[in-house]
Image (cartoon, rainbow, N blue to C red):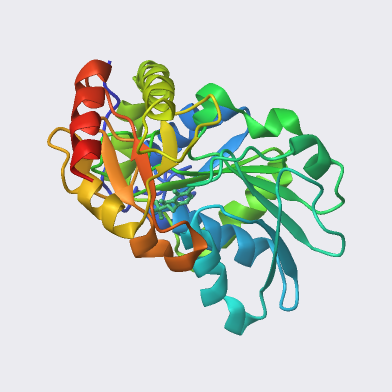
Length: 322
Ligand code: PLP
């Protein structure tokens, strides 16, 4: 059954002239609320939607932190999260990077993990983070609730770029924060209403539709990623393969930047584009975005739903061009 899509920005007061549950879209709307309920159930908390993953990140840190506060950020995670935090530096936000497989540093006001990190594919030490006095955020975009529910491991907030696996079809930009604590969720909801960083009904409706096939897609994408990782490990042109054993994201290194460029532009089925989590398999060299932060020959693959053997044949022929 398909949920209704309600695009209205307004709903009338009731017969007594009182405010109904939904009254003005910035404060809440039925389609966004339905998508939040579905996602909250999946992740085991109270979900709030934002216009993008980066928007969710911005809203969360601005509502939680104060000028002078420091975030302990997982090193080697999504480079854009560091870019977002750098953009907020003029407002007094500070960042220290740390190895998320170990213990977060002391003296920080927020711990920011990524499961698994993109594109290094490390998994965070959730127990060590949970023992830290500061609130813990886990960006679980790449794991999805199918593989990891961070709130069950002591995290205070799970964050997703719902643009990726949750919506799943490369046609919607959306972000989500799932809160363990109801009061924290209400604070973030109020902050969202006041600052206007709200998701619109159309993307929320696409998320609702995407969630119906999330488990099927993610299980298939994970199986294909494990298969490609195994084949890549045995290939002589491949130096190192990073795959944590879950999810549809993997990365591997070829000799240098020129080889990586040749490989990514030689695939015929696998599309040479950024992003991850959609039904189409994508490949890209990450150094074009991240510069020296990654090895020059690092290629990232996000597996889609195509036949794994066809994907491997495509990758193999591209590797021989490199
Ligand atoms: N978190 C991770 C792990 C990502 O990979 C991305 C985008 O690539 C984001 C957050 C940001 O999400 P969005 O592009 O929806 O703003």
